[in-house]
Length: 180
Image (cartoon, rainbow, N blue to C red; front, side):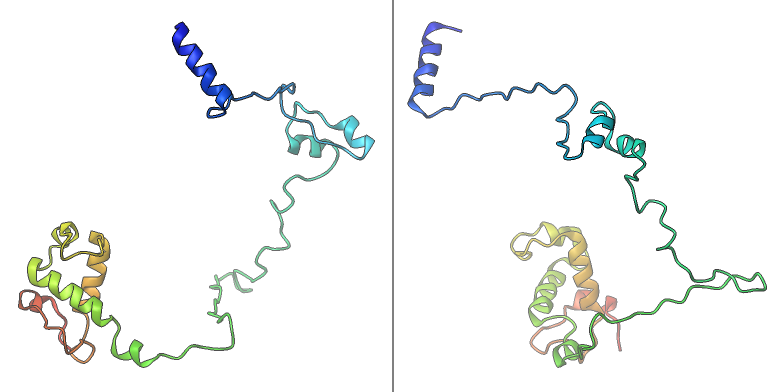
């Protein structure tokens, strides 16, 4: 290093703007040995071996749930005749309160704003979702091609009763809409 550069660096360091990184003194070659309260563990523990190996040497399991057969399914996979029986699964609700469908769920599977959003994009681009995703003026929410495709298919599946009155359906995609 040049003399002028090192002087300015030292002055910067002294001023407190730049700290000098201090390395810790690591005297352990493998890793820090664990602190033991029991002398028998301290005598049998080998810091150069893995924890699971050391626990195995002491007669303990390191992975207690690895081969746990108590938690395995106890449902019979076949009946007495040797034919396979399918496991029966039930959809159990998490709570006793089952939410009812609201009027907005029934009448508007897609919000009015989303319908207007997709109608504007369909009017300009038809069903070209890639071009829709690149238009930052109409696609101001910056939805991806896949998100627009999902929204577009939902919009095209709406029946006339579900479609909002204030949204005009674009003529260039009328052939794609499902008539109900």
